[in-house]
Image (tube, rainbow, N blue to C red; front, side):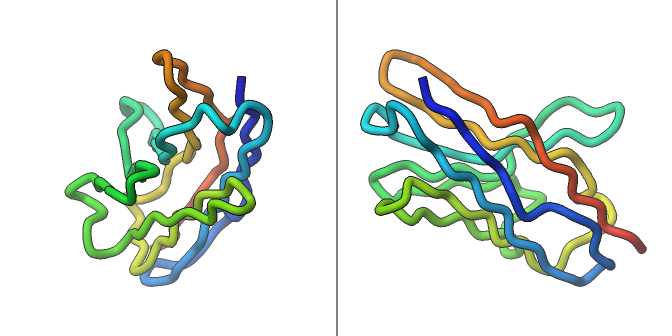
Length: 116
């Protein structure tokens, strides 16, 4: 099992930036990808961005060109740099860790609020 600690959320005005961090601990040697999902009020949870240990990344169309996911392997931490934020980016953001064997671990979620 992998434990995840998220940080960096908060409230920002439209057009601003935030950086989310997700630090993994535990059986991190079994990880092959991590990412960020988000869930707005009344909406389904959706993938915002994911990074594989190969270096490949994927983004939701709605965040392409504005969000960037990266990884600092030495400290088992993944970052989500969010620029040019819009009110529709307001959501609870959840970190997810994918381990071999089909195991998924989730963080508790962190609120991001973008005011207009």
